[in-house]
Figure 1: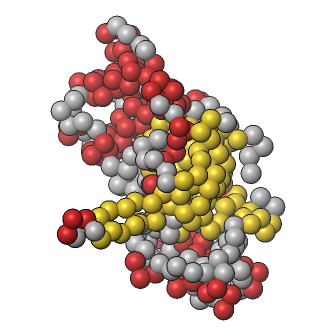
Figure 2: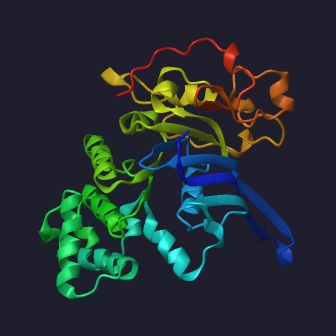
Figure 3: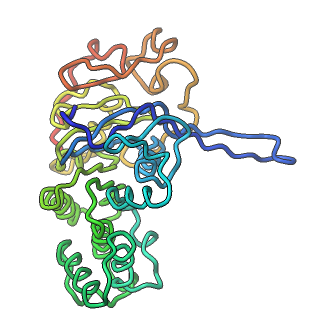
Length: 332
């Protein structure tokens, strides 16, 4: 765990409810995030890993103050984010920014890049004057590896990689202290992914930021380093140093993710890009039990708490010590 926490998530829960049927008498609740707690320190890197449907994006949106939690707290420098309003909320969003997965959807198609970058510069930093706004917009583009001539183009005139760089530049406009990157490389060609991860690492160091990187594979987490938090069906099931989880995952789900990660030498993978099915959700015991080959009777009755099993390595599993050593996997 970090020595001093800039951001602390405490028992965070997010439920989405909707009604249907005659006069809305029937309802359905989706439990997206369930009792999640973790901390991020200054200049920290946390990789949030899990399949589609695990609740990663919802958790990221809550931290970015874009989704309101059902219960629990998000504390930023000791202040509860859920209670911020008006100018206080604007100041928080200046400090905590988010890069979205699909840059084509998140960028206004009717605005050129100058308008996209100058808007947060005006609203979040108070910068005024066309000359200063233009100069700072060009500086942002340069910082993410783009040329000045991009500034007058529309998003559809750029490649996917260029659009994602513009999204990163926009998030950097307010000089945030925490950057949330939601699957930032999943829509890019494999040849570009390492370049973008290197870009995030450089920006973190140069701009003194913490990064919460949301991803579905451990290969991305390996490149970023730091700590990894493994999420399944809205719950954190393992948190620890990324190098330790790659070497010896404690939870069987982290083991599955490791086996499903793209490897060296073109070896086949299993489970990549899978989605958690509704049939796998349980109401009692361990959430991972329907898929776990190590499950025992206690797993059906009691939900394992997320506890520290080895130094700075937490896991929610009754049988974590009773599993054979996983096969060695070389992550590309």
